[in-house]
Length: 148
Image (cartoon, rainbow, N blue to C red; front, side, top):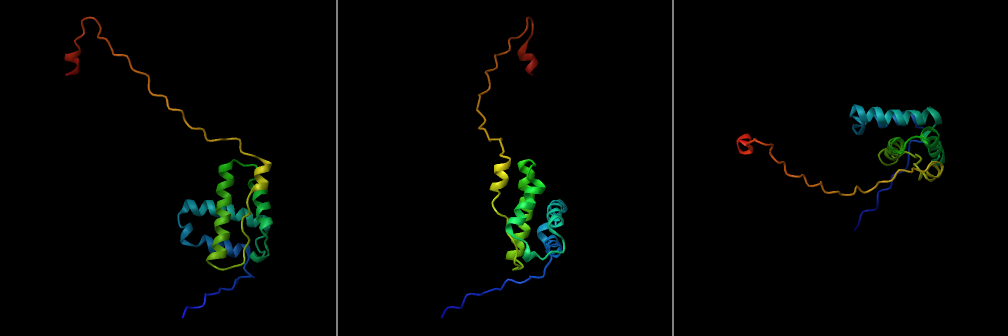
C-alpha cells in the first residue's frame, strides 16, 4: 500500500512584502554580512517600489519584472544579474520554504531587447613565448665563475 502524496496548501496570503523580506533576511542563507547587505539592498529597493505593506500574494510576476527593469534595466549586466538573482532567491524561498503565494521572476527578455550587452567572451589566442636568444658573455667575463 503506497502512501498518498502530501499536499501542502499555499498560505501566507496576508504576509506583507516587508514581513516576507525580513523573514528571508533572517535565515542562515544570508548570515554572511556581505551577502546580507547585497540581498537586503536589492530586496528593499524592490519592495519600496512596490509598497512595503502590500500583501506578497497580490504582487504579479509582471510587476516584479517591471520593478527590476526600472531599478536596474540600464545597469551593467553584472549589476543586473546580481540584483535579479537576489530578488529571485527571495521569492523562490517564499514559495518553497514558507509555501507562500509569491510571484516569480520572469525571463528578462524585455530588458535584454532594451539594452543588449555587446560584450562577448573571446577565446584568448595562445602565443607561445618568443625564444629568448642566448646571452653571450661580455669580453673578459667568466660565466662559470658568476654562476657559482
